Image (cartoon, rainbow, N blue to C red; front, side):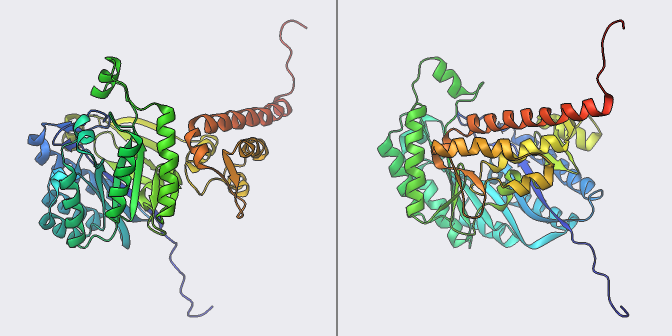
Length: 413
C-alpha cells in the first residue's frame, strides 16, 4: 500500500554474563572458579574484559540485551569504578533495553551506601547479596568473610541507595545447623523484606576444603534433614507471599530473576571471563577456566576457547525437559512437539506415574511440573524421563532407517 512503511524485523533478546573471579577469601564449600590473593591482576583483567566485550559486539547483529548479570567470585570486591566502566562498555557496544535487568552479586563486607549509590546511578538495578546464614557460628564454620551485622547493614545501605529489587542467598545444611537455627535464618531474612530469596542446599563438592573435612569425619545434616528443611522453607515462603518459580528460587510476584530464567528457558546468552559459558547461534561454548590464560588469550591472541559444541535439536529436546522441569512453569506437550518434533506420549505417561506418587502435577493450563517433593528427587525423575525420551527416539529412528536402507543380510548368499 502506498505510504506503508515496512516494519524492521524484531530483535531477539540476549543476556550477558560477566564473570568476576576475585574474592577476598575462598569459602570452604565453593567450587566456582574464584580466586583469593590475585588482586594484582585486576587491572589486566579489566582491560581483557573491555577488549573482549568490544570484539564480540562487532559480530553480534540483530539482538537487544535485556539482562546483564555480574557474577563471581565476588563482583563487589572488584571495585565500583571498574564495575561502572564495564557496564558503560556493555551499553556502548550493545543495544540495551531501557528496562533491562542489571544484576550485581555482592558480599555484605564489600559494599557500602556510597558505592551502591554510584552503582545504582550507573544503571545497576538488582542486587544479590550472599547472606547465607543469620547465625555467626554457621558463617564462621564455612569461613564466610562477613558477619550477620554486616549483612543487615548491607541491606540497609542498598535500600538507601534506591535498590528496589534485592535478592538474598541462603544455605541450608551448613555445619552445625539445626532446624531451629535454619528457621531463625529464614525469619531473619524475611524481616529484611527482600524481593527475592535463593535457598540452596549445601553440596559437598570434590576438591573443596569442606570435602576434606567431611572425609576426615565431620558430620553434616544428611539428605533427609535437608529435605525437611527444604519443604518447611517452601511452605514458609509461600505463606510470606513468595512464589517458588524454580527449585531453589522464590520471588514476590513479577520479580523473578529474568537472567537466571533465561538459562532454564534455554534462551541465548553470552558469557565473558574465565570459565564463563555461552549459548548463542546454535552452539554452546566456554572460555578457558584460567585467569592468566583468559587475559593472555584476549590481549595477546593466545588460546581462549575451552570447549565448543553445536547442539542438535534432539539434544535441545533433552535440555528442554531437564531445565524446564526445574521451574514451576514446567513442560507442555505442544511446546515440546512443535519445537523438537518428538513424541510427548512416553514422557506424559511417566509424568502421570510421578503424579500418582505426589511428585508431579498437571496444571489447569495444561502443563506438567514437579511438586516441591518432586523437586527433591528432580535428578532421578528427570533422568528417568530422559531415558524414556531416548527409547522413544530410537524406536522412531529404527523403522525409518529400515525404510530408507532396506534390510541387509550379512555373509555369503
